[in-house]
Length: 505
Image (tube, rainbow, N blue to C red; front, top):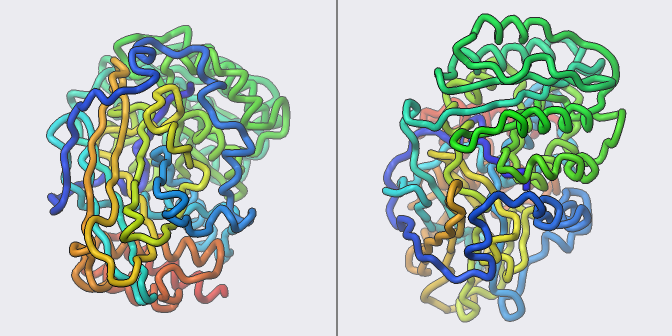
């Protein structure tokens, strides 16, 4: 599989604070039909381990609303999904709104809005996950919001393993938009300046065809690397298939077993030559990707092929981020370098089991195209998500409670594999109805409230429906209040974006 991670760029890899109700991870050695099978690289599983294209696309906004219906716990009390650290949906929506346009509802993925923001979860003491559950009753009678938060331990930037990075850079005609290729150059220059003596870089460009511009070169040769970046120039059409095929071939040739091996695609995702489907492209690179070469899709440009880049990331065990400014590139390639480059967990999955005597129905907000069957949770051959150090993943559920019921509401479990040994581990946590706050806005942490605002805003953009009985105009006030409480520039920006969306209708 194309394993990957990214430390989600803009926000979720930030500082963390202790939070009550967290459980630290323990290696439980849970039985699995695939245990013992995953010790070696899985060259032949790239296609078999992926859900097919139809399943992956089923959750896209604008499709059948049945995908968003509440699940009746008498028939389906288990919710299972692959972890996801993409943030591209929020990044591109932000740019679109700042330009005075409403984003396409089909490009809105609520989990990517929520996971763009910093969290306050306690870090685990080991290399696994801590798990945090909290929640609040909502204005709608008998309903509540449940938050499941997962956190990995941060690494000392000086202690990260060496990296072999193959950049696959789009230099096609569509990259001629003012500032687009300049932003790519800026990103590459920033990364080169941050790398250490054990790191190596190669550069592949693609337009009509692909070209190996720079074979794997030590990061200490900064003059050669910077000069290669400066030579990047726009030409021809967009043969993304050729670019990734050549990039993976170079990454495979230069593979180092004890290093982080990653392909980083920088493109607007507007493929128009060669195989333009994510499935065809992934099939072409499956063998090389199976060698534990991870993927990061970095999107740029006013016109952006969101679907292709998101599907490459999700179906290729990768992550997608979108950058529209020098500040964005600084966050991804400088401030959060260790999280961006290293890997803490492979094929990470979450499973939430609801108590049917307490919960009548539930609805997972977002993650539609990361859904898994319940039996896939402990099948280690099934695709999960790749998570970096110091990273948080958040999922929100809307639940309908049974009248007068009390007791354990739900138990959440996260399962992952060690990046090197493929040894599986799990950790769990539970939430009781007595722990629910009386309102999303009272008795909850500011970060919980930010998550609710971000998710509700995403739901407004893609469905025009309120999430918690609070309209979009009320969300502006909540976001403004939370910006002052958190002193977080990203929350201030969120309030501005909500105001812009309200003005645009």
